[in-house]
Length: 129
Picture 1 (cartoon, one colour):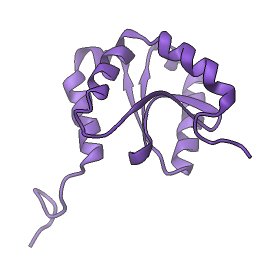
Picture 2 (spheres, one colour):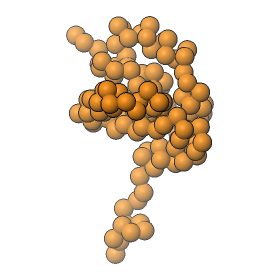
Picture 3 (tube, helix red, strand yellow):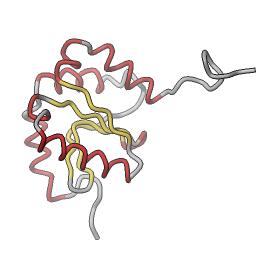
Picture 4 (cartoon, helix red, strand yellow):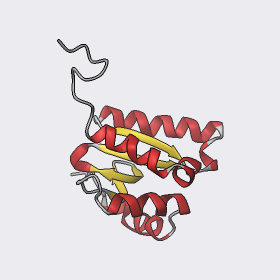
């Protein structure tokens, strides 16, 4: 039987990635691990054939921090493939650039919080009674 989450074959690579996080990944991880959202995130988490930067399995949420290497056409195509895989598993993916995390961490955290706790229906612009 194939393990879908954190498969054994990716254990060493996940460990490597945790030890070599970018500055932006470290900054976001420090904010996420404080559990300021009241949920647990895991870093360098294996999902099927992929390893994602951060994941909240309980909330079916993946957060990716993209550096300059994600701007060329091959990387964009690969990221789309990964995102489609996650979407097919009903996992929402949020992508932030290194610059967004480094220069606007509060804005990044607000977007994550909004995804965890969507606005109430019928609120401002919600078409209430």
